[in-house]
Length: 449
Image 1 (cartoon, rainbow, N blue to C red):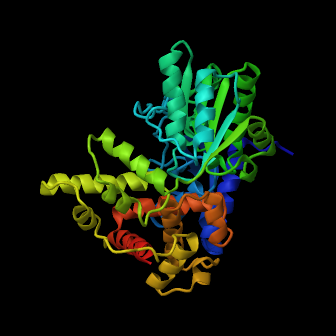
Image 2 (tube, rainbow, N blue to C red):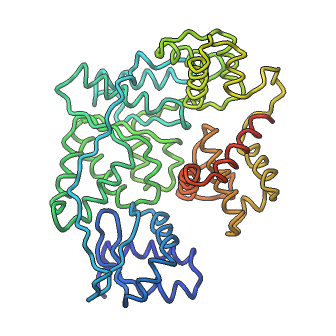
């Protein structure tokens, strides 16, 4: 029996997703006969039997096949159809040379600009200790917490501090997505200028003094990149090089990551960032305002933090809206101006219901006139799928909770499905006015409850 190739393994994963999206007739007629040939620039090259079949796939089935590829957890994004002897369906795209896509550090993210309070003083102290003595204290350092609580700020603060105080050390800060993309490019660039990229990728990440990777939960079920990071981790750890990683949940809850990775994360220091309390939210806004050279009255600050989730980015967005309104109308910042800018009432909102996944689900159910159980159910009816995706998007946007928890509320869906729904709606908001209006209306309804 011939050994199955890595390309065939990837295509098998894509086929499994496609089988769920296509009708049995369409799948057997058009998808199953396709033969994987290569991977170029994160696109799988598929050979069809005839130009006619290729034409039907590219005109009638492209969106579903692309969705299957993106949901397959392989790191691929698209497809190319080729036909032997065809003048139309031929491979003309060549692999790009592997680019070293280190994320540019934001110089504003320093330890001095990080607002410390009861909810984050432990993780702040741990990050500061790592920056002062890389590889000596708390290796690896695993930081976790909800969206918008300051994980990226702290991780870039570590990188900025080391770059300033210990310039001889080689530091790489990157995101899990960029690491994954570079890995995929390095694995399959066997032709053209990218053909030596596998060695370059390996050397790039193993010849560092400090490696910082943000949001590793996005490697869920992506076994290839987990394998690559596992060996990178071992190489760096054995040389006492510092490793810092972040996620949206504790290491033990990353059940879609391999056990051997989770145990290595748990062997270091695990530090979490808790949501800020009211006083800390106000302190964060004061700091943000001072950075913009504004002094905001206390009653306005209290108004801005009222009725909000725990996402610091949301708070800063509200602050920016009020500052812009002040500039636009050439008026000093006041409570009345802030209320008008945010289109909210200044009245007492002490009886407002706390924003939870259940509150968002209920608001969406009312908006679309659908039952909550149907939205969280398994039906693939288009209106239910769209409502389901919008619920997931709003939960990601408004709440500082792990994606795994959102998946549980939404009918036990896995991590990758939550990510896909969130990104899908984020894209549609830019392209589809009706989706943008639905998201805005439901969000307003949630905040007014």
